[in-house]
Image 1 (tube, rainbow, N blue to C red):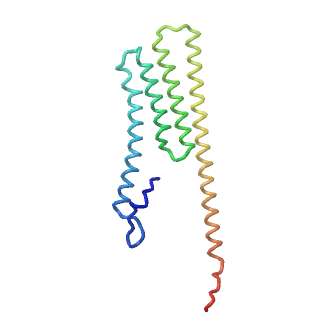
Image 2: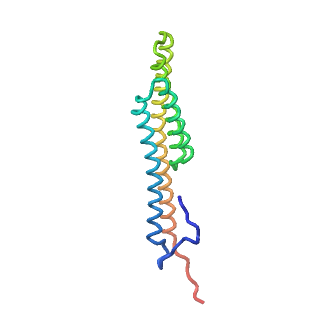
Image 3: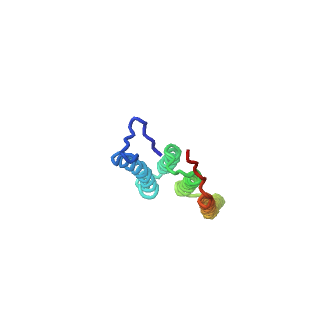
Length: 174
């Protein structure tokens, strides 16, 4: 949330902020949200399409730089308001980095022994299992968050109804 300095607040006769100021806040929010989405698109584009144009030796280094830059930018900008979403995205970035580097290592080294290929395969299967368990955990988290929100709304509604049902205090005429 962006709060302006008190000297910049412009009040109209109704006490609300001026239209131009609220429009500028909206544009700043849109710019911030769009900036994060553009960073995400560039990251995905580089990891899925542009690395094939690099020599095989430098692909791993470029992938590591892109993945680590994405993690740093996520921690720097913190585009998600909910901390749970932030940590889910952080975990997915780390898993993506590990998986991408593992598969790139397998392709770069050329001839691996059967034992090494089996170990790399088991590692990739383990990463997939972690990802699927994380997805199920996210679904459970979504339902629990929705349940908390519904309970909070019903408690607030009950409090408002209780206040509305109380008789108004009698006024004394002096």
